[in-house]
Image (cartoon, rainbow, N blue to C red; front, side):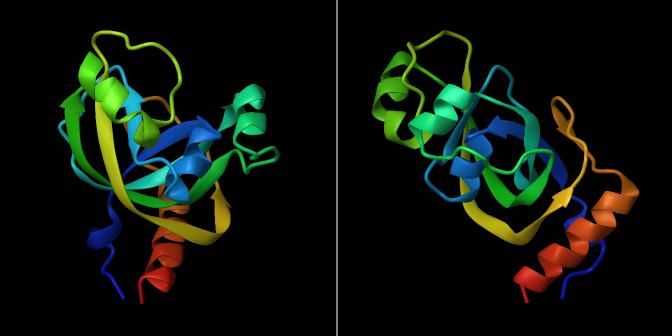
Length: 145
């Protein structure tokens, strides 16, 4: 079982169905307009907002929203190029056109919680509240025994 310090990770809130695709391992690249300095494990939060068209496209209608669904490793962040956009499409699952100034967040080792932990998300990377962090720590310790 891990120590409390071991689970002091930052969190990332992702809209559905992208959060579900990340935690299931079907998606391994998250596209963002910014590049954090942080690398390491992240709590994965499924935001309240969703794209219903994309949920239907991926067969994920009714995916959980409004809480933490697991954790995932942010392994690297690299600038997205037009060439990478096309080469990595199967990993980021975005069918749109390439736009300059985007970053590929390379994600690996997703771990899904047995049951989601309700909690609020925020923009950017964030620290969960202390009460939610206690729940996340307990759940993560259980699945990594």
